[in-house]
Image (cartoon, rainbow, N blue to C red):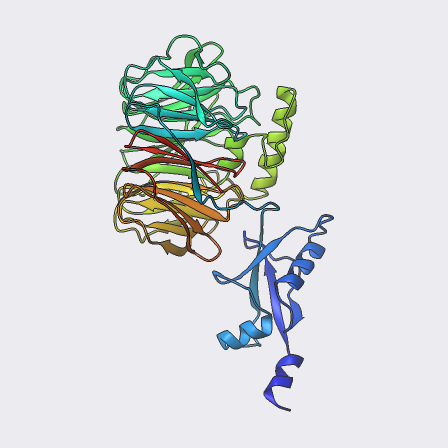
Length: 474
């Protein structure tokens, strides 16, 4: 009997494993002509999915795109050894890569420092060195409102996840609340921070609807929780010994702060007690990201465009989305630092990091989980963007193409594409599946400071030193 016949007759012992590492049933003997379509059937059957879901399959960190027999031959693999196949759920919808600039909108008179789409993706806001916040009409691609009130550069902006408010923080340390429908300032500025605002994060809508509280981080070393109904600072989170550079309000009700004192602190939000301190970085912490960030940002809004009539309805829908995204796994946190490294944490479980991620040659400026939490991307001043496994922290690939510092990254809603903006004046879209450059987007005349991919996946916004806002579509 020659080798070919023998190949056809032998089956491969396979163990299907979830991304979290849990076995799906017992190991199976599968014929060598089984490939991704058949594996898809098997997984849907074993998980009792009424509606068939799409899955991708990975052996090691490599996607399986051929039949098992072909894979075994290519790898010269031992048939006696059980093959671990990780199944990874894919988004039911597909986002097309943006490939053209659909509008260049002038208006700001100084650099654009922040851009952010509303949770439903229908509206866009920007903050600038010209001290204004602007809202833009995405249908006509023209300026909608110019919001004056800050005395200094607008460094950060954040939409409430119910889409009803936008808060902005400035270099002078004041925070201003805006009504996106009218562009009007709501009440007087919120004062309390002694130095500039570095970051803002809202309480998730599945914990409180309508949204009432947000947390701000400042160069003064404090983070403050504000209530927009009483317009007061309700809790001051003090404990860092240096500037607080980033803050995230987690889905389980904890607040995470990263600081130039090299630590990350975890706070509970009823009294502002310090729960734990996460240590390990040897230099400033620059960026924090949560594995649930996309569902926290979008709340009840998903790709279907469904709207909600009551705050309670919205809260229930948001809670459902949060639970579905998180599954049984704990919320994960990643930190990026000036020490060139990143740490992956599961703060509710341990004070010790789950993984230390090394490889960048210069400081890590921005970290971001994909919407499905499966991937993690990091942007660095070493001109590269790196991709990591969002569950284990294992290094996957480096995206090279930028010729200067990479400032900010953003994901497409289906977790299949990654966007980066750089000092080199370009935006780039990377394909996660092929791990290659999908689209090069030149057009800005100078450094690109801020990028955002709309939660509905249809458009990208960018802003930077050349003062214009660019919208990109496909």
